[in-house]
Image (cartoon, rainbow over all chains, first blue to last red; front, side, top):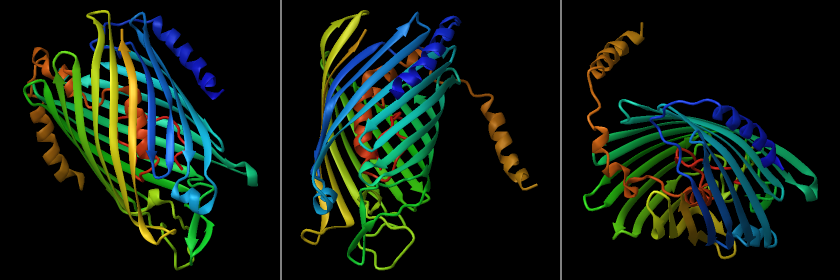
Length: 363
Length: 73
């Protein structure tokens, strides 16, 4: 198992870090455990399953974490019902990590492994954050290196894709009531960046999609959250995304959080996302080109999300532990501008539902 | 030489910053530590929501959520 392959060096690093010590101004992440049931249903796809997370500190020097995540997918999406037969598959993902703090810095190293039929993905990440300016500013740097193996066993096709991710972030305390952050991330990909199962349309005929083998994207996200005075807060976020496939996207999210009595915490949010298509995307290409795709993820669309979360403190012993029951729901809508439902000739759209039910404990 | 005009702007700005003290003291940050103020609250919850989006949208990254590997393509 790839996860255990990564676990050994991380455990070794944790052991060596335990042997050192320093006075820390930054706290280790809180010890916690989470058990979640998650569901996405929409556009003919149902993906659901359990997820588990455990995080535990050792001798107040390092914090170890591990998570397990299952997606059981039943796929009868428009691509599948118009080109093939509905199918079911299962994706299993493992993550392990170690966090270490020294003085005003925090270092997190993690490894992930995801496995599903015809697709495996493994990655390692390192993230470093540093508090400066009397703790008012936090700078963060991160790097991820990942490799995917893509295949289609029935036709003997195997390929891979490599990914490099570079992150940079700054979080700033603006006032006793306001926080803001700016994040930048650049991602480069090299390899097979499509699906061996998906077809494009050229002159009305289905042909295997042909994607470029490289892609570089950049995204900038700005956020601000402000205390509104009665244990409630407002949040605004904006992200701009652009890449070498000529996709441009704007995403705005507005949120409101409020404590209700001593035991409840409620959140509500609205998200709007708009995207323009990749250069080689076409609903039905009328010229022969080197690259062609009808992957609607690369098309022009607008998506909307409206959601809420509720957390309830079920059991609490101050200074010892706290157990919360959590529920979250989001309604999502995707309206595509240049993806035709070939069953009736209309522009395709779908409504989806995202549900999360989980128990979380800190101790 | 092209850098000179830029430096003439940046250097005084940076020099000016040297005199600025942190203006929000640690004891004034109680409200900022309230859970209602956190950008993201749940590890698994944020990860699931991020996965749902990244497999359906062309945009990706800068979310502050560390994603695992996925069959996104």
